[in-house]
Each structure stands twice: as C-alpha cells, then as structure tokens.
Length: 190
Image (tube, rainbow, N blue to C red; front, side, top):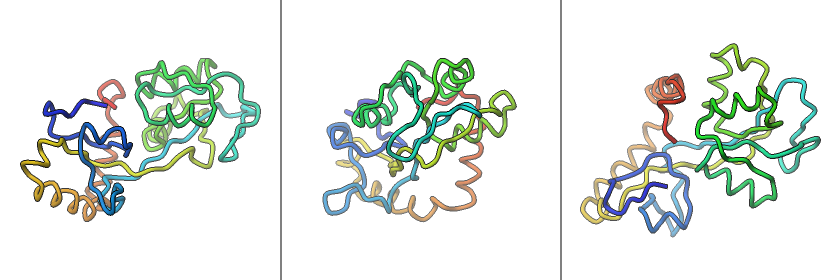
C-alpha cells in the first residue's frame, strides 16, 4: 500500500483494511466503510488449465498440489494464507502468472477475473485456461483519500464519493473498464 502521509492525495481501488486507516480515509458510515460509495466490487477467482483435475467448491480444493500463484501485494495473498493455503506471490503481473500456469509451474493461480477473463478472451495463447467457480472472495474497493486531503477538503471528498455511487454502473464506466483491461499488462500498475 502506498504511504498516503501527504505524499499522495488519494489511492484508487483500495479494499478496506483497518490497518490502512493510518494511511488514509475511506467513505465511512456508522464506523464501517460504506459500500454504497465504493468504486466497484471486485473479486478474486481461481484459474486452472483445461482438463486439470483440480476442483474448487468455494471452501476447499480437491487434487491441488503445490502453491497457488498470486500477485505480489494483492490483498488475496493474506486472505489465502489466513485460510491455510500455500501461496507463491512472486509474480508482479497477471501475465507472469498466466505464463507460469501455462508452463505448469502452478496448478492454480488467483487474480481479478475482469482482467484475466478479458486476457483469455482476447489472447489465443491462453485459450486453455479456465476459471473455477465460485469466486474465492468478493469485496468492495474504494477511493481512499489522504488524511491531509480530508482535513482540507472534507466536503469535496464526500461529493466525490457520493458521485461515484451515481456513475459506477453507467455505460461510460463500462467503456473505461474495457479500455483499462485492454492495456498491455506491463503498463498496468496494481
């Protein structure tokens, strides 16, 4: 997590963690992050090679050998470890993990399905990679503002969070999502 101690005014797509409150402020209601003022809901899904015997029932795996491939710094890593899964979070990009899955270095990887599904659909190289259902975890993501920004502009921050609720499901947002996921993986910083 980027340190928001006056170095940045905010951070996009931050999942809520109490420990992150020392870095910035989320839209809150009754002492909790307000999901109505989120940017989006994102999930983490598992992916395997077509024909693999690995199965996922929403709680546990069948026929999983080795570690699950994950992206360094993603919140899924802590959640996977908390649930007792072995994780290799040495990858820095989604493409890196997809290639490791193709090379059979992992039986399963986890990532954001919007990104991976788009990549699989638009790149023939990954046609034999399939998503396991249900998603591993689903949670809201927020625009988090620095403490300094909130101190100087509390009304503006609240107006921005409120506006997000209105535009989140719009057609223009779908176009923006599509454009974002179409970018080459090396250009996308997470």
